[in-house]
Length: 65
Image (cartoon, rainbow, N blue to C red; front, side, top):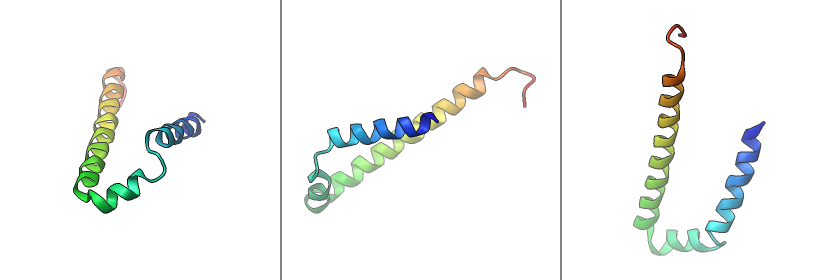
């Protein structure tokens, strides 16, 4: 149930952070910069997911599988 709320918050933040024409203009005029920004975003997301997985694993009781 909380996933839909997080999705709405993420969409709202995206609308506020990136005005309507910035990404298409960046793709046309500064493609390497756009690629770098996408890689940074994906790397941050991957580190967040891996960090949360480690935290969940560390909090699991010893007898649990």
